[in-house]
Length: 209
Image (tube, rainbow, N blue to C red):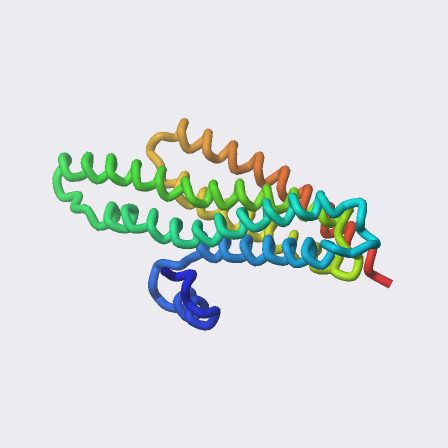
């Protein structure tokens, strides 16, 4: 399990010539880091008399963030798993028309599978951005900068995962299917980036002298 490695080992794997982990796995990991920062802010707010009115909200945020963090870590592994069928499809022979037809069919299914994980990473990043929106309003002011860092990480995860969608849809023969995936991706990007940048701007504006 890649995510059982130390930080240094994971970085060494990422830097190596091995195809996985790659951009998709790194996006999921940065999303998990951003979510963990959100949890930290929630935990620092929990139990503080000054924030008595939002204690129940913090408990809900922490529960959701904990689940999201684990889901994003799992997606690091899943991204590597879905790359394997695609890698094998690239290696299929295409010397005859029959072989070309078979390769195209296998490739199409592998590309669809390869899109599925980055789309999940995007969805989870969107959920994490929403939690940071709430933390920006209700979290302890002493850690508000960490909300900004966390939401920035989640935005990076969202954008990074989108590139892993696009590189696969570009190769699909079924352009109608690819267009549908691209529209879904573009919608999440537009919404997520706008929300994340709003949170970041609010944080930055509140702490700059």
